[in-house]
Length: 118
Image 1 (cartoon, rainbow, N blue to C red):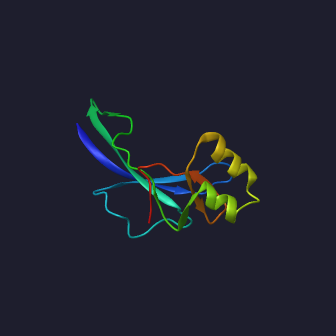
Image 2: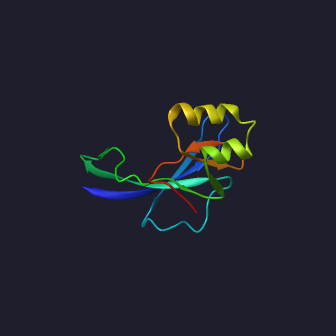
Image 3: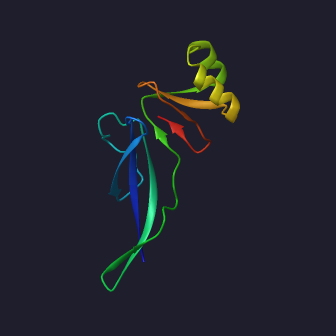
């Protein structure tokens, strides 16, 4: 069985985020990102070929999201700087999100301990 590492780039979509994925040799910070990418994460897939059929595992060893050109904000910062974003504020309060990542396109995502902003 062989384990391969992939990078998944996160891009804004019309209704939900879109992704682009490619196999990589290492988990080094990429030197180039696709246009409009706001982040990326790494993961592994173990695979094996049996009688010419590819068998692949689920994703494993999934990294946190590495956000780029984004801003990490606390609930207090969102309330002070983006008071018109009432749905975002309410979602943060209801779901107990202490921090979010705010993207230039006006999108916001929960910020988890394993995530980072570059």
